[in-house]
Amino acid sequence: MALFGFKHGVHPPEEKELTSGLPIRRMPYPEELVLPLRQHAGKEAKLCVKVGDHVERGDPIGLADGFMSVPIHASAAGVVTAIDWWPHPDGTMAQSVHLKVDKYAPQVPRPRLVPKWEGLTVEQVVQAVQNAGVVGLGGAAFPTHVKLAPPKDWSVHTLIVNGAECEPYLTSDHRTMVEYPERVHFGCRVMMQTLGVKKAVIGVERNKPDAIAALERTKPADLDITILPLTVKYPQGAEKMLIQAVTGVEVPSGKLPVTVGVVVQNVGSLAAIAEVFDTGLPLIERIVTVSGHGLKRPANLIVPVGTMLRDLLAYCDGVAVDAAEVIIGGPMMGQAQSNLAAPVVKGTTGVVVLTAAETRAEKVYPCIHCGRCLEACPIFLNPSLLGDYARVRRYDDMADLHLADCMLCGSCAYVCPSNIPLSQLFQASKVALRRAQQAQKAGAA
Image 1: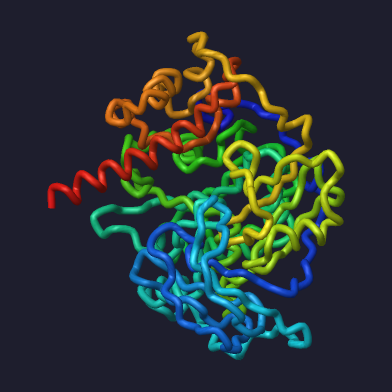
Image 2: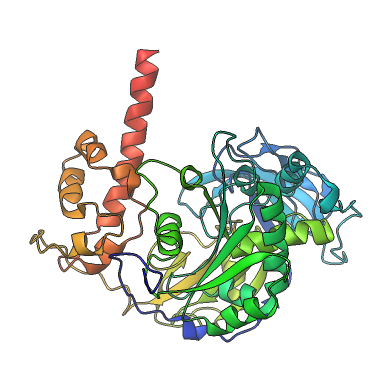
């Protein structure tokens, strides 16, 4: 593909000008942090502190419970005041540790041995990344160490770095590439050596020329790293779409990128890996875009993990009088929040505040079979038929129509003239189907 893109997709308003030119600043510590033990894909961390314990910045409060798990660390020095069930950004309740921040602490982590990564074995690098609690910072929060240890049956030949950041409003990856390009390349070096690959491609949408220039300027001379400008289109940053845009190869239905010899990693995750081996600091803070026309002062901020949304919005001077909805993530794939006590977690890419005019309730009409959703779906599903099945709970039929391949990108709902909430229907159907399959297995056992 000449312009390095993919077929179908949509072009929602970018709205990135609100924060794309704002440098990253550090947010002060709030009085209290709430740290859920479930902040990553896989098994949640196992609690290792109790009420009354004093912890330093970077101390573990939850330990990895198996290979498909990572620890959770205290993002500030303080005292554990409570351990309870607390609102999670995904809409559920999660076991969480409440930390009263010591406002007089220097917030310097305890001295830790920073390993010379060049002399480590592959297993030691993987273990160090897992111990640091690094996960994918693009939103999915997939444990990064798992990607560093692909199955032996598959040969990986290319590392693709995801710098597309196609979601409207979000600019945290953009600013990371502009301000910390050396960290991105350092993390790239670590991943390339650990995976044993000789080639890496950093895909960046063409609407970020300053990021492309920064990465080109700092590119290591001894590594085969290509900075590839991509077509500006949503969902360019989706893993399978990015692979197709960069390599021209389609990942088969139900398969992982490693089956076509590729590992994909987010630029923020690479910067986090770099920080682990540069400072020894685990993943206890992240860059978050706080934006939207319903916010008084948009910003790109380094935010301690566990900061409650209400504290984050207050630091940005609060919301406008016509603010109507707060979304964690972007407006296409993010989740509206019903409780501002929910905290920022490792996978929180941004917080977007929308106005009443942007979120006005639209009446839902019957499907007119116009076909726009078919033209928008980047993986060539039939959202119209899937929506019909979802409304009558024919989940097995949805599975036959490859519901599992749906990435919930929201492109179908975005173009639907009948305002049918297709993405939400598919998300609920995935949950219902998974529960039905689990119940079937339990009955068979």
